[in-house]
Length: 181
Image 1 (cartoon, rainbow, N blue to C red):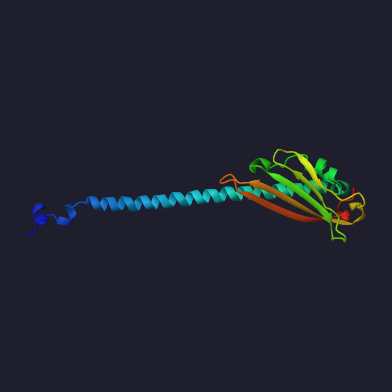
Image 2 (image 1 turned 90 degrees about the vertical axis):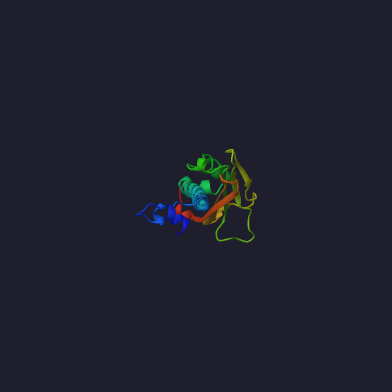
């Protein structure tokens, strides 16, 4: 008779009364720990992706708000750097607080492109809220002589996780018939 069987009281089996060894318990705990660690890592990645999507949505909403502000401002405001500065970019976007170091830029150029190409109107709102005109057409060219413009809206921000810079852009064509005011 084996030694293990000799320790079993009568009527029972050796398997029913045996326990796990220390090595088996340690292997089980190691497997459980690795499973929990991978689950924790996966959840962290999901949270990072969720935060990134929220920032992208906020940037898209900021750009859509600027498009609507441009349409509401009217044709004459869209065609002048001072109009863009004072009527469109003067107030922060509703979702600007969700985007760290948000910089917004609006670029306006004739559509379709003309030859020679004039310097476009470029107006920037920096992270501190300062709005400045970066470029505008020379005195000899007046955008009011054209019937449509291409307006490029751009939002640049740094993400919360690793301070990486992101950029979201939206372009539209605005025609004089759509904004006569």
